[in-house]
Amino acid sequence: MTFGSVIERNVARPLMRLVTMGGAPILQQLHLEERLLRRTSDNWCIVNDGTAPPTIVMGVSGKVSELVEIRPVLRDHVPVVRRFSGGGTVIVDQGTVFVTFICNKTAVAGLQPFPRDIMSWTGQLYGKVFRGFGEFHLRENDYAFDHRKFGGNAQSITKDRWVHHTSFLWDYDVKNMSYLKNPQRAPEYRQARDHSDFLCRMNEYMPSRSVFTEGITAALGEHFTVQHTELEMALSDHDDFVPSTKVLSPQDLQDIISSKEAPTVERVQGWPR
Image (cartoon, rainbow, N blue to C red):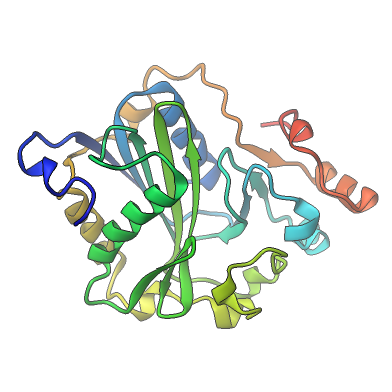
């Protein structure tokens, strides 16, 4: 039995506002997500199909020196963003499809606002999306086809709300993966495989991106009343919000090379927007 399967038969489904974007910069997307998490009381699903330029995105507590090949990043002018949520480090580009759920704690009947419970629910939801397109698994904190990862997740939980966002690899450039180090803490199922053996592309399993996004809308419709919402409405009345997601400057990265140690979270808060 899935979360809310009994109760939702007898009560009105909560509203889920769906915002779709095409190619929005990942920094803009993360600023929007944090604003909606902290300044609204609605449930949201944000879908962003691709982003440019290629950008490295890190969790709030990740250490740059342990996760990023800093010298090539500086040489090739690859932006590095530290987001407001936890989770690992990814490089995203036009081949990445982003899906984010921002929900009130009471939005899903029976769902406890803890990381494993949220992952269990999202895993069930994506299981419906990918049914018939491959052997889908929730492996530890990743989405995988068989034993290869195609979706990385991050979460943030506040007093009354939570956010779960995923970067899905519809496609990826092998060259871009060279900007990332293999993390010191990796899931057991990775078994020390390099990126090319550990990752797979969704386009090997699904016919089109539109089939994927339509599947998300259909799966959400089993839990929510889904309402398509224009981006302008999502942005309204929150112009004074100052997000914590930041871009690391070239000088920040150069300083890390010089000191051979990662900056602290306190220092991150002072970096320019």
